[in-house]
Image (cartoon, rainbow, N blue to C red; front, side, top):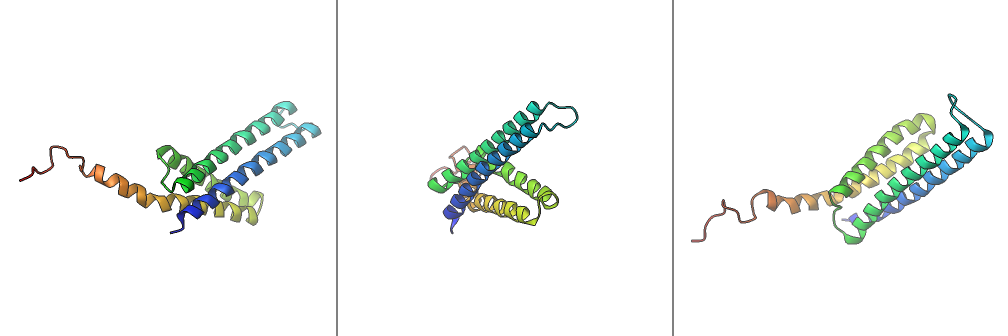
Length: 152
């Protein structure tokens, strides 16, 4: 199966998305700052700094998800527990963002987010069978405990 290329493409896509999100939030912060916009009495500086911080944090989150997928592709092994949890949360976030983006941005943004969601899920599912097989002998008591038959 082509699980290494899928994980590598998903990793590169997430890394490019991280750069795009960070750049978009940086530009939005500049626009808010230069036009002296405010909502509900918030200071302009607080809104622009909040936009920059949010873009940086979300960009780092997407970048870390991309690194997990890239490491998965290079090693050709399933990510660990923390990596799987990180990728699952990333898939859920892309599903929610896709649902919101239809009304706010349009169908092309929805299509992009669904492609990324599909790549993440496909990367997780391709390595899931390997993880289930690796955990099965330990769960069945194959470790030579007291339940093992004695040699005759």
